[in-house]
Length: 132
Image (cartoon, rainbow, N blue to C red; front, top):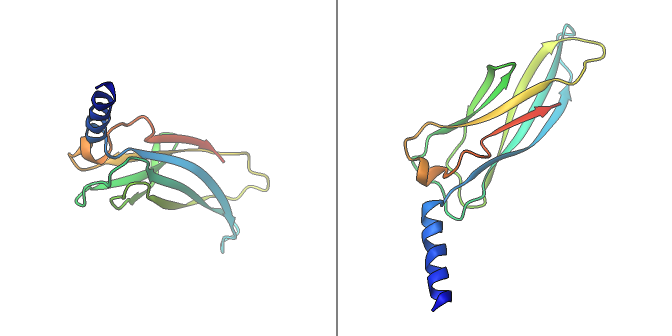
């Protein structure tokens, strides 16, 4: 009897939290800028649905890139299937410095739709601060 009760609990838990997005794996790539007065970087990050169900097809969401509290880039994220990842990339242009110290950015996942329980059941992994 106990295995059936436990299986029922797991089924209900699955329905309560079908999609769970994770923002992870930030990377930095240095790109040669045409104007030598600036340094050009490409910052990439993975957004993954680590839930057991796909997000609803009409889900509206985006990822912001912020530095010192100000949003410096934003891009839409398509609805993700279970286990599916989306690689997001942002261009960052900074004034040229011969030796640049590491800089800090924050990635912020934003759910624009009102379907939070079906599209992203928890906001625990929706932000990531990275020093690059």
